Length: 369
Image 1 (cartoon, rainbow, N blue to C red):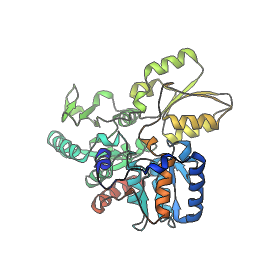
Image 2: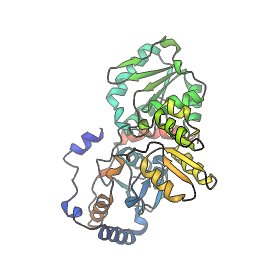
Image 3: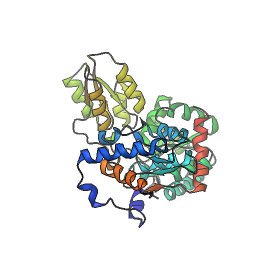
Image 4: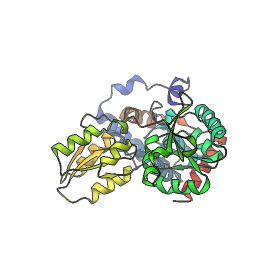
């Protein structure tokens, strides 16, 4: 089920109007009070891309899988109010104990990339690929995917990957089968495969809308099948952005996330996961210059944390991730005050069968971490 279907369900509540009239100071004070009253029974993980108004109350910050794993380690937490997007909360529900309840403050907080691969499209495409290539393909999915896609991958012998471990996971996958289906982000798949020495002309794109390959060569030469999906934020960093930086600031380092296009990654000085970007800037010498190609909330936070360095967004016109920004202070307070009243709103609950198969995909990855 994609995010549009979720927000149209009768069970999804809209935020009461009273929260739109409260001042920021009032809301912040109430959040603090509720956090203190719940103590260890409440855990709030916050993704790096969240707004500062939310991140200030996070018990920990990190990437999506990291947050789900930390949530699972907090055995005393009865309620996990996940400040991220839907697929992240799903992963937290899969990894936590049955008695722990995962809540997403705003059900509209989805991921356009994750929604670019639904289970019906994936199974239909997989059937075609089996007819074309036979039993020579192993599926891998970026953790930025729905629980249903993770479950599909688990059922078919594959694993999840993160932007940090994509390279060793592709290396493992090639020991299992001759070909890889990588979904839902074509750019992370392409950049990682290229780094492993796979030529671009041995990568085909599968278009789930037309149910067809986008490839001009002989399909027998294909080693990597890339699902035609992308991150709407990272795809907006362009070659022109890089050319502008090189022209105006020739001594500025350019660092980007591998969800950017191959052309952008190839022209950058560094490319890596969110953690890699944060760690690289942390370790950089004072006075160094950086243009960062990733989500704007994080870029602004990095800028604030490093006043001794000149840091800009690679795209000066970039907006924050719109769906990630659905989680705001009023929605966080609404979720917490509902808990205080004994009500659980916007609970994320993954079907047991889907969770079991998705866990297979996650465990295959974690076994190689």
